[in-house]
Amino acid sequence: MSSTIRNLGATRAGVWVIKHIVSPLDRWLYRLTNGRFLSSGHPLAPTMLLTTTGRKSGQPRTTPVFYLQDGDQVIVCNVSPGFERPNPWTLNIRANAAVLAQIGSQKRAYEAREAAAAEVERYWPQLVTIWPAYQRHYENGGQRSIFVLEPQKNYQGTNK
Image (tube, rainbow, N blue to C red; front, side, top):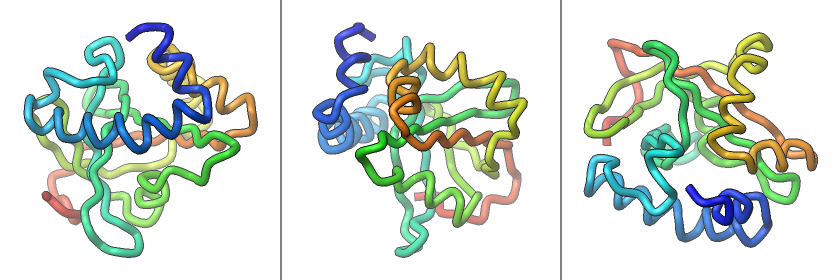
């Protein structure tokens, strides 16, 4: 991923472009290619599709997100810039921890939980390496949300 794209993600214009153009395009491309091709620069920033259940609608909501793999666990992060409302997928996870993750062609059910303080210390430097804009947003008053996804056999969310 080029430094231009990484730097753009830390600006108001970049946040708007990612939210309204890149994410919908990448969601479509990911489904079409099982994650082999994305506009956002895969594989340098590993990307997956995260499906949460809408906290108000009850409908499935799928968002491309960067992730870290730690054994069977998957770590996802969002830092809402100080000028934006919290990302809906973070609110959805807090309302219903059952999620579905698609990594490549593999779909798996997970239970999400907020990362503990020691996990935040461990994962934060790796997450910032993937997407440096996280650090800029956090330093400028953004809200940091880091979740650990643990594999589940009995998924209670949606499979759509």
